[in-house]
Image (tube, rainbow, N blue to C red; front, side, top):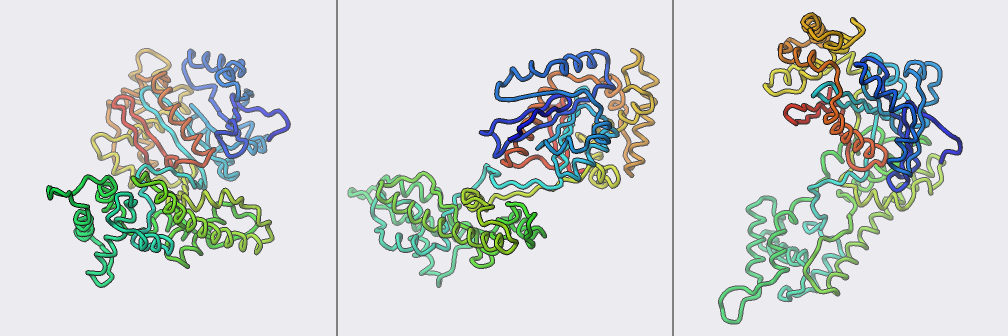
Length: 485
């Protein structure tokens, strides 16, 4: 943790450790400029006393420093090294250039936020962001029934199908083995074949003594319900395969991050076994305590064996480059193995690349759609061009902005030409941007600020996957879309 005071412009906060794996600092920039006078007054109030903001959360410390971004970048670039994330709000694209270039070089994430009337814009620029705990919503249970490990196969062999306390994974496995015996040891590879295994489960139910059908057995109900997904192949997800094929997973030196050391070990494990390490967790199961404990112990033992193998690979690589074997903690290895199927590595384009080589084909396709958000992006670029040509945003100098409409139209056409686009910006968009007058509506700001805060937490904790590149929000329709620009 830091031992000396630090400051930011205009507000910086340190997140409590229960939110982040290590002490984290968040730097937030807010432009003191091209907006109406009421906006300028609001900024001055906000930057006057950061302790007032700190009252919102006693565990957050804040400070402020009224200084231009350009001056800080040119005269004190090391100032930025202290921060985990930098947030820049209401800054024109041209003013962001030097800041974005410096942060990209330092590999510090930059989150840009703009609110312009009913339009919201967020842009994430980070060379690389890796995630172990991505928390997917649609994760399937890792039961390995198609290729049971020895302890699971032995447990299944010792169980009689007719008992009502048999855990449903064992019921599915035994019926699968029965199906394989009738198909020369093959595995069910289609939905129709998995339905045949499900039919065997129906037949295996204990029948009522009065001959009026099968007894009600919850474990069989669970097995029948889970049969189709439990018999899906445990293939390596394409995203994880791409991460293992990344050049960073092929080399190891004193600067290699923990994530890529673990991926390198995972790659060796997959090359040896053809599968990912077992997660070792079980779903809720209808069974007796003794059977559940035996099954759970079997899964945990196999997961621990896989973890030890991964840990040995990690230790070998660390020794090879002269680093201590404790450089990667055991808890981190265990967490990595448990989430090996859900790894994520995000690489955004830099703002400089976006300016020099925009994704023109993507923008062209989006501009052809009836309800597209790319027009807002183009209009925002045009509004910035207007500002740097006139010293103010369109619609802010006079109540009659007829001249601004014409000049903003010319600016928009210039942006389209610069981006190599053949489309045109509709007149109603030009009129709306002039009518907005660069206003920051509180409802749009609150919504976009909530999204930005959520993304910052993702970046700091390396949990969940941030959006890639650009997020555009249309306050008129309430729609949000992401683009890789």
